[in-house]
Length: 157
Ligand SMILES: [Zn+2]
Image 1 (cartoon, rainbow, N blue to C red):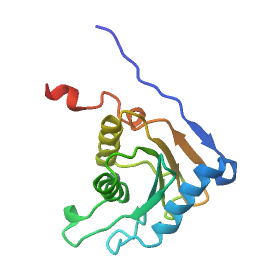
Image 2: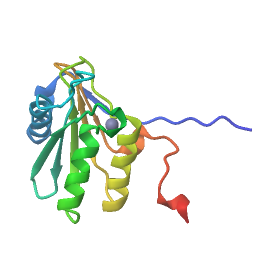
Image 3: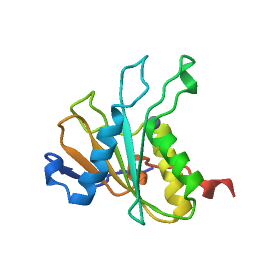
Image 4: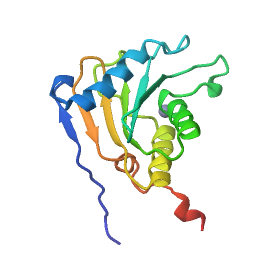
């Protein structure tokens, strides 16, 4: 028997001003669209934005539903759209932002798995930019870091 340990490194910036211009631009799009969140039940507004390798930026917000499981996170709704419309263009960055908390917003477990699937599909990592309202910004290299012992197609044989 032996104990195993999982750890990862990420960068924490004091605020958005410390980011590179390109990172800040993607995060600002996520900030902006969080205002369009359809969140009448939780009032928890989330915005997500991706940048593709060709430089294009797309964004979306969370969309709730009276039948709660029907709702969709900002990240998953956005990634589904991008994967459907630009299946052969790699995603380089994904920013997630909320005005509701003053701490970098981590994606939920389902979204982490979804991001991981996109990384596997395109065979490259997606930089994650996580921010709350006026909070520090966490920059991570990959969804893998948020999913220790992650599940992928490799287990499906
Ligand atoms: Zn989610």
